[in-house]
Image (cartoon, rainbow, N blue to C red; front, side, top):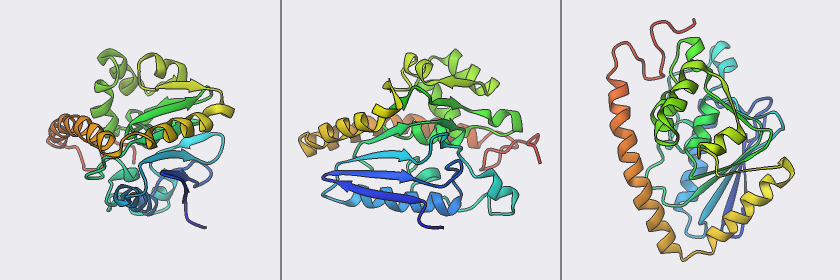
Length: 242
């Protein structure tokens, strides 16, 4: 297989495409590669905005590669410099990342979208956190969702694992805008180009200050989660499905 993460520079915009059929699931090697890509984006003086998209029609991303894990691949290893998916824990990223979501964003795929600064989704997109049905935690989403949408709605998603259509996600403010699939990428590129033309220092400082306070709140909650008795670093609970 070739590189599962493709990149294309469009002026000051970096377009990142996760292309790992059939479901754009992320294993450790792919996560590390995504971290490298976004670290290079962070460190490049020429690049100001990134657009994250995925290949294929059915899945934005299925999250963690369960098939690889079932085949014996390492599960609890080094995700890379940016944590799972390259973005969740990437330090000193002071440039905006736009997610263009098309298809199903499942578990870690949903969390990957939540790691971006803006989310634009196609009408066919759906979001879900099915981890609880297998006795695991949607750990990043458990921390992030209550800060993105009403508590009771977030709790319902976490405890039922139900699907949330893109239109509902937009209604709760999780998604910025819902568009026909044929218009999604063009809209993301339009916004990216607009952001790239902003005064660079003002844009960087605005993003940095906003994100720093948000991350402080997330880390406070993450510390509580790691202290829960019986919870592994991978979010596995004692009643996880073997």
